[in-house]
Every structure is written in structure tokens, then in C-alpha cells.
Amino acid sequence: MSEADGPRLAKLVERAVRIFEETLPPEELDAAKCAILNDLTCAAVATGPVLHKAEAFTGTTTALPDDVATVLGTGSRHNAAEAAFLGGIRMHAHALDSTHYASQAHLGAAIIPAAMAIAEERRATGSELVAAIVAGWETAALIGETFVNGVLARGLRASTTFGTIGSATAAALTAGLTARETADAIALSANLSAGLTRTFLDGSDDWAVQLGLQILNGQVVSGSRVRPV
Image (cartoon, rainbow, N blue to C red; front, side, top):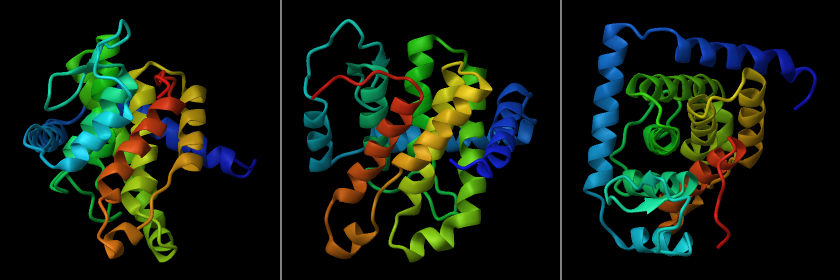
């Protein structure tokens, strides 16, 4: 991050923290709950071989002492980072999860599992969880709608590029990081964002795993521990 980027990042974080701390208007709260419910349903009904590949990636099916988070749609226990990774892949398995059309990104699957896993780990309240999800969504959406054309022109995928930032923002706020730490998490997540649109042209299933890997990156930069594979 350059010195010129500092003030802009500070304003972005200030906006995210304000959204997180202020009471959401009733209509925004209702919209957020509807989006969350839609995406949880997507995770619950997910099927396909990519799910087995994702589970193998975590390296173990045996619960360990730090496995305090639930994988959405399965009820299995993992640490927060792995639970978010697996939950995100399930939520995005059929690409029916909520989408921010201005940024052409599936933001729900990137943000919701990340926030829910850490919320469970830290025993955050429901209102804190929803506020963190909204703050992560608004942050990713603002960046996404600003830079989406340039990102797509370079063959990069919007969901993974902007979803990583939203995931890191929501995870950082849920984890109780300071504004400075949240800024660092966002900056690092931007450096770790990846994913090519080539997956759609080649007909591979990389697209389904891409989002999970970016959620994992968002968790790591927010301080979650990842078990070595």
C-alpha cells in the first residue's frame, strides 16, 4: 500500500466501522436477513463432487480441540478458517447465492460464511453478526462497482477479487479487530485476491473452489488460524 492509498483506506475502514457500530434501519436489516437466509439455503442444499474435493483439502475429518465452528449445511466441526472455507464452497456450489450486480460479484458466499464462523468462535451476538456481514458487503460493493470493468478486462474474476475484501472486512469486525488492524486486513486481502474467469471458458470446476480459497485468505489476514494440510 502506498502513502497515497492511506487516506482512502482509512475512509473505507471508517465507513465499515460506522456501519458495524450503528443500528441498521429496519428496511436494510430486513434486506440483509433475506439475503442471509437465501444463501444459507444454498449451503444447505449444495451437492456435487467439488464438495468432496473441498473437504479433502482441509486434511482431516476428525474433530480437534480448536474445532469450534460449524460448517454450513453439514453440521461438521472445524476451526473457524476451515469452516468458512467449506461453508463458502457449499454456498456457492450452484451459483445461486446472492449477487451484487453492479460489481458482478457473488458477495454473499464470500462474506457470510467468514463472519458466521468467527461469530460462532467468539460467541458474538446475532446483531453483531448481521452488522459485520452488511459492513463487509458494503465495503466489497463500493470497491467492486468502482473497479469491476478494469478487473474483468484483465481476465480476473469479480467475485474472488472483491469477495476477498468483503470477507476480510466482515471477519475483522466480527473478531473485534481495531480500525488499524481492520485496515491492515483489507490491504492484505487485496494483495491475496485471485481467480481467473478462464475457468468458465475451460469448463472446469475451479470457479467453485476459487471463492472458498479467497474466503480462506480473508480469514488468514484477519487472524484466524489455519491447520497445516
